[in-house]
Figure 1: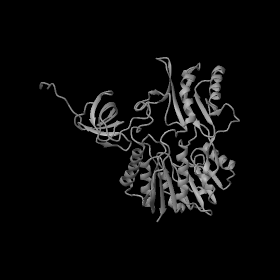
Figure 2: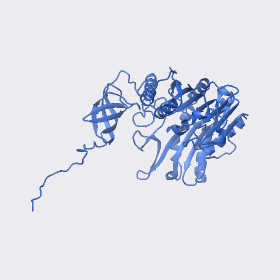
Figure 3: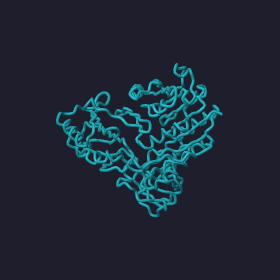
Figure 4: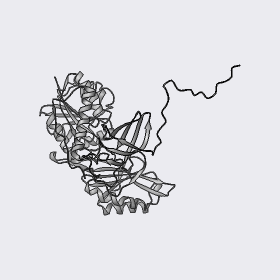
Length: 450
């Protein structure tokens, strides 16, 4: 029998596997450029590092958050050599809170970054450039956010209630006493909220808190167990002090404690009032939202005798202003409760040339009765995964003009490929700065049939 050979090490067919870099390790890096999400990119020993809080040309010390093969995710701990573009972070929670990832960049540079991200996606994925670039739609860089979800979690080990926003790169909660991007009416509520919640008798049964400022201020509390009379009194006193509505979300849908109270927001240029309930989708930036609706109407150029289709209509944010300009609006949404709310919004604003339908818009457009007559123009505002199945059938509806509002340039670019294949030309495109201090890009594109 042959003597066994000792000491051999067998390797997988793909070659040797590099040792993982431990979470928490610090590494000195030189940042080469910025990624599309605003993080700095560095290269070291065959690995690509994505570093939050770093700018091109900087030398930084980065702390490892995690590794995936040869990709390392990290955050800036120290800047040895700063870029000329760097500004002091306006928020005291910068680098810990996961919300505002590019606040170390001046606002004009944030806009330039977002513009590059949109242009790069359209060029690389779709191979197109718009015939004209629109100027960015932008508003104040702080004090713009009218809705916020506040994380609440009971730490059983430490026996304390954590209240704040999620940390960057983890599920940890960063205690927040003020948030510069919240609208002013929500600031005092945010600062006093943790102390109030800590007075409640069953902190382990609390979920999240949602804040909203529109036609009224509202505070919604998610709770997983019934509230005691004493706890309800604390909550009501808190909301009364801040002149806010109290909404509770236990079993079923969120409900106002006072059912006679109305909640919503205005589209002032069109003299419209839209009802809203916590949990509904709503654009968080009121100023940019109004500018977005106005630009969509300008680009779509609806005529008085036209029939227009609004896909992913939500509460009627686009459909109701459109209805003031055309013969008929057909609006379609996937969530039945939103369809009902949008229809109520149309009726309450005395708009009777609108029809609302529920349909699964992740699936191909079927021979729905509402689609048979065709449309002169289409507006769509899909979620992040885009609208590929819907887009594949748009030419068959006869629409000559199409405005696509996107919250993800990657899926906009993918869907552009299909629209070009159907004979549409990309006439205009531009960014919507809905979320200043973040790398999140919203965009609008106008397509016209050839």
